[in-house]
Each structure stands twice: as structure tokens, then as C-alpha cells.
Length: 150
Image (cartoon, rainbow, N blue to C red):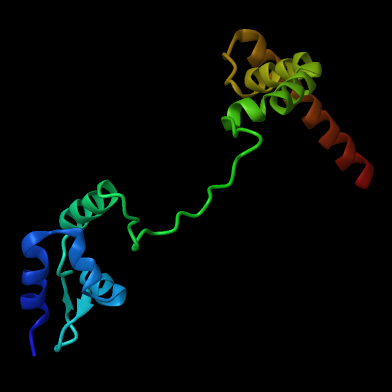
């Protein structure tokens, strides 16, 4: 028995399409595929892609059909071309912006007021006078409440 390499060597030597007629299609096709060895390791194909391409080219140029042609699946045609997401969502974004702009003046005023209220106030004489006045009022209310309890 001849090894696959030796048979392949004889097969490849001439690289002529006529050799295909002496070997079965399955035999030649197995030369073009990787295979499992004895140790279950993958072995490279006997015929490389370049050699297969040369054989195919010679076969087609001699007027014969290449029997090992892979079937090409038809690609589905896209009727509507897909666009970029920002272009597709533009009308929705513009509507949302218009909706948000309607009450924007009130929201800006509320934000500015919140910032003003959060800012620490400067301690001026008027501030201290107001605090003293509030303190006096609280003391007066406390005295009145204490007088009512007696």
C-alpha cells in the first residue's frame, strides 16, 4: 500500500487536470481537506490551497468544469439600506428637545434660586440684627408660655 503522501507526490508532480480522471472525486477531495492522523492529531491537507488553485485554473482553461467547486449561497439583498443610528433617531431626539425647551425658563430660574439658597450668606450687620430680633421674639414667646403655665 502506498502512503497518502507518496500518492499525493505522484499526483502533484505534473499538476495536470488529466490526472483527475484516474482518481475518484472523493479521493481527490480528501487531498484538499485537513485530516486526522493516527494519534488523532490534525494533519495538513496533502494539496495546499495554491496547488488546488493552480489545478482549478488549468482545468477551467482546458475547457473542462471544475468538479469540486463550492456552492455559493445567495446573499440576501437589503432593500432598505441601514443608516447610522444618529440619523435614524434624529426626529425623536428633536421632538424630545422641543418638549424639554417648553418649560426650560422656569427650570433655569428654579435652579438659580436653589444655587442662591445653597450659597452661604455674608454675615453683615443687618444679618446679626435680624438674628437678634428673632432671638428676642423667641425669648418673649417663651416668657409668655411660661407665664401661662403658672
